[in-house]
Length: 382
Image 1 (cartoon, rainbow, N blue to C red):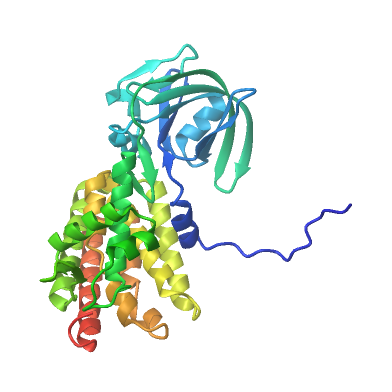
Image 2: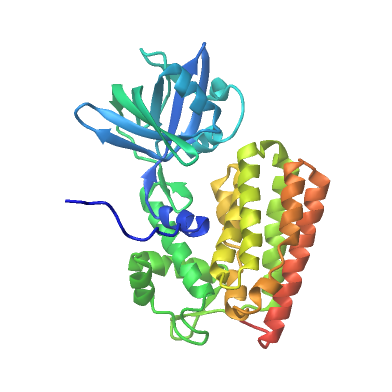
């Protein structure tokens, strides 16, 4: 029987949607390590999985632009270090470009000669058995030659956040509740239904309740005399403050961490910038896709600092609801000019701190002005 697939060629999911959806897959965090001519190499990776029990095999995907990728090819062996909950700093450390990453990292050399990180939740050494190519990555299929686990708790990665598994769930409930509030899924002057939010966002009721208390401290919701929560109307003073606070964080990163802007980060910023331009040119493009890419751009820039707390603080200052509520599909691509993002990207690529700060200031001023116009047009609050 002929089983050939005769279905029409499928379209490809756009990068922003794909990044968001696969981010919903919770995983551990690993560092892939190897050695060549006495030099130790390592890089952070989340695309790692067990492959087979008989024989015992693991799968690890590495970007071909990574220096560790080439060393694994040369060595024919690699170590998988599954990080523990208190090792998020190592995930950022090995995620950056740089020489001799092991200089400040306690480690042990395995019988196969592979460096293994001390304090890891578990370690596995593999001999490369097969390789395959997928997009920008090489898939290494490794035969496990040694493995060891310890009584520790895992470092979890979910929707761009690293941390303990339970706090990650609570943090994501907070983010989902914040989005619910800012997107005005419950209209202004209407009580927020905790159980409705929990059900719609697949969060625990207790976590949503805690999120609303936190949002009250951030002046995004307020408690009524009856003890219920309602969304706080956003005015121009609020959007001004949010933009200024975000600019302070990004300005500090540009001033202090320009040397950490790797070629990979620059390539990602350029890719997002190009995609922003493409969306603005497409009449059928969706504002949410544009905003998601904008979030990804600033996440990538702030992430250079390697601080989960700083990244989280920056995300909390987002005011995307202003655009979602106030711009029609016909006007958003005209209003959401990304010229200053283009200038910022090129200044960062050139490691030109002054030009980058100027572009950031122009981008901030543009955003504040547009936000004020939008809020004013809607009667002073949204």
